[in-house]
Length: 77
Image 1 (cartoon, rainbow, N blue to C red):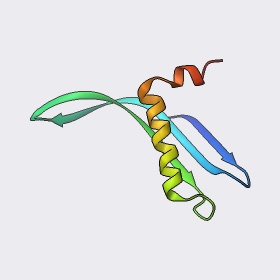
Image 2: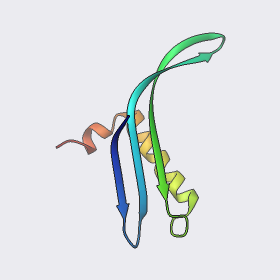
Image 3: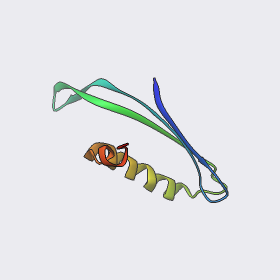
C-alpha cells in the first residue's frame, strides 16, 4: 500500500519517492523472534543529473526524520 508519492522534477532536482504504509514484520534476533514496524520508502532519480551518493544521503536523512519522530513537526498543517 502506497500512502504518499512525492515528486520533484525540475532542472535542478529530480527525485521521486513512494512511501508505503507501516507494516509489522517478524525478525529473528539473538535466537528469539520479535515484531518490528517497517515503513518502506522507495526513491527514484535521474542518474544523469543526481549523484548516487547525494541521493543516498538524502534518503538517510528522510529515514532519520521518520525514526526520530521529527516528521510530526515538518508535516504539521
